[in-house]
Image 1: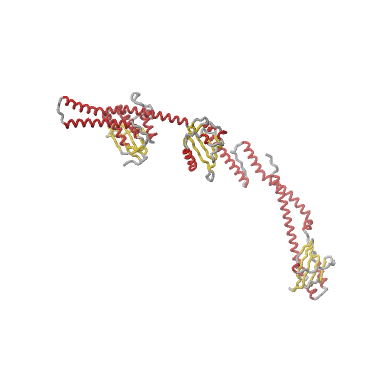
Image 2: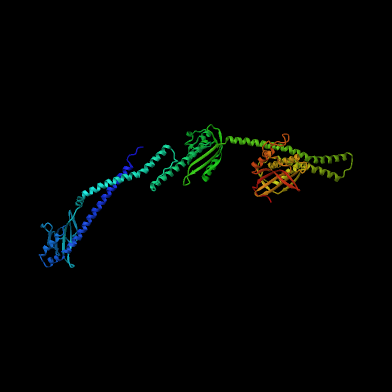
Length: 606
């Protein structure tokens, strides 16, 4: 772009004009002062003349001494600027007139007192003064002094004025040129610097000057501006990079009209920017969500200026896309909505994978339960042998005595039948415990850890007795919120694993320690054994699925894996394992220590 005119030339013209204008104002002020001073001097002179002529006027007026007229005329001639004078008596009669050029003239009639004003007529100043002598008012004097007009003053000094004006013009031009050059040099330097910045598109440059004035401040402000522009440019680059991420981005105005979308939006929805811009996000509605869903969304945006959740939208081809959507409201200084910025990601594959994972987890749980069922059946078989033997022996004894015709006392017969009935009740309760263990329950409820453990131990206690496993217990009543049947499965896995380790590694001192207690805001369930501990090289693998140390014919490798999944994912707890040394009855042992930590989400029963 071409610019007309030059700051340097304009500044020079301004300085020269100001200099000339200043000179003219100065000279005009001088002329004004000169004219005012001349007027005041004439007034003073008129009073001095009246004072000098006072005695002579008294002789002329009071004594009618005509001879003093010549003296008055002689004295008046000494005042070179006095052109004429007229002396009036108190009755306004002129009795003496004087003319510098000794020319006769007709004296003016003395004006009324209110009209005796000082007047300037071309080159003459006419004024009236009272004629007094020793405070006696004798009459009136009309003076007419010659004065210089403004034209005369200027004409007299015209050559000097022109000479001075010319010198001032040259001096002011030189001064203006130097000043304008010094004034414009920093600006031109700044302009050149900014042109280089614009040419190179680099904002991380700085300009410096030694000027400790407005230029220094201007340069500093330019540097600050460039620094802010550089930061803004960086932020725009970051914003542009963020806008072109794998997440779909949508910017709408406060009326929800789409202003801009990114490439990921097109990839996820199938709509191009041209197809989406100007429309509302309702083009993506799948029809799966009802009006209540969108009302809650808009209410959250109005109150919190934020909404996040999963939503099912429709692809351009009609397929449903699962999305994780985040919406932010951008507000102005008055807390009014300017824009809505939405970010969403396609979680269709993730939701599918989660469903598959959930199915696998359910299969693992079922497999784990089936494995536990085998162990449970084995435990039940152990528990049923003695009761079945009691039933068989008692019933066989009764039948034998009947067949032999032996008389059976009624009380013995009743006692035998009661024994059979009690044994059948015991067997029935065992079946009930077995059924409860495998009863699915997907609702969290408050249950007692001690009761849950004791019911599980009851199913295993017979086998523990046969294997000479001693269980040492420290149990408190602690209630937790969770899934009791799943926790029962965890207890079963831990107790069975401990039993297997003790049987495999210890022939004596088969000790199992079970503790239930509170620790701050947590409930603790721990199982510790005297089995020698877990080798360090497999410690990190012990919770991996399908990892087992028992061999494929004896173990599935999913018991501990599922136990950790139940505790950590279903019940928000922790399952920890470490080898621990301890002393029992003055003997030192080492064994595996399983520790379950569950949050106390509700008050415990006392």
